[in-house]
Amino acid sequence: MYKMSVSKILFLFNIWSIVLFSSCQSSKKEDDKNTIIPNTVLYENFIEIKNVGVNYKIPSPMEMFIFFKKIDSPFLYNKIHKANKYSEYMSVKAKAINFGIYTADLAYCSVFEDVQKTIEYFDVSRKLASSLGLDDGYGEKIANRINKNITNVDSLMDISADSYYSTKQFLEEQGYEYLLGLMLVGGWVEGLYLAIESVDGIDMSNPIVERIADQQVLLDNLLGYLHNNVNNKLILDVIKDLEPIQEEFDMLYFNDEETIITKKQFVDISNAVQSLRNKYID
Image 1: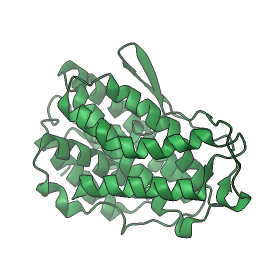
Image 2 (image 1 turned 90 degrees about the vertical axis):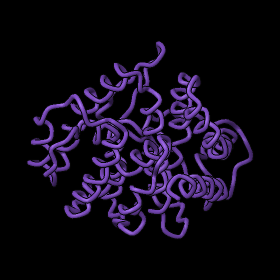
Image 3 (image 1 turned 60 degrees about the horizontal axis):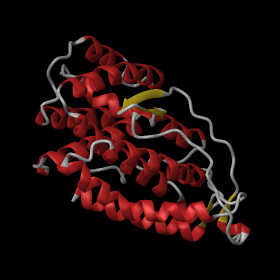
Image 4 (image 1 turned 180 degrees about the horizontal axis):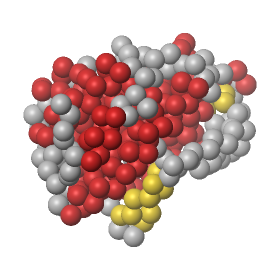
C-alpha cells in the first residue's frame, strides 16, 4: 500500500533541528520566576549538510519529540496540522512548506506511537511529495523497511538517517536545493509550534522551555543556510517570513549569562511562531 519514495518523505526527520550553542550577553536580570537558567542540552545522531563550503551540523528532530515523551508531555493530537487540508495547497511554496509541516507531524505521531495517525500522515506526506515530483528514482527497499518498522521509533530513526542522504543527493542532482530550504522551514516551524503548545499555561519551569530557547541559534543557522540560496524568489519570501521570529529570538542575546529566556520573551516568540504557522497552513 505504501510503495513510494519514502526516503524523500522521511528525510525531514533529520533536518529541521540545528545544533545548540550557548550565546547569551549581558542585560538586566529578570525576576527568577520568569526566567530559565541555562543547562547543557545534548543532541545525538548528527547529520551534516554542506552548502557553499559551509557545514551545517544537524540533529534529528525526533530527539525533541522523544524528549517530550520522556518527560511525560501529553500527545497533542488536536494540535497537529489537519491531514485533509493537503489537497488545498496549489503553489510550489505552499506544497513544499506543508510537506515539511506534515513530515514533522508524522515524526511526532510515530514517536508517540499513534499507529493510525502515523499511517495517515505518512500517506499525506507521500501525496504531497508526489505532487512536488519527488517520487521518482528510489527503490522499494526503504519502503519495505518502513512498513516493517512503522511503530518502532528506534528503527525509524535509523531508516530516516539513511533516507536523508538519498533525498539530499536527489535534490542536489536535480537542482532542487530551494525545495529543501522550503521543507526545512515548514518542519522547523511545526516542531517549534508543537514545543510551544506543549508548555501548558506558560509554565517557565517546564524543561521544554529551554528547548525552545535553543531554537535561537538553530534559526540563525537555518537562515544562514537559506541565504546561500537567495537567488530563488521563494527562498527570499520565506526569509522575510522568518524575520519577525528572528527579531524576537534576537532579544535573548541581551539576557545575562544566567538567563536563557524570560516569560515575556517566551510569549513574544510564541505569538510570532503562531502567526507564521497560521499563514502557512491557511
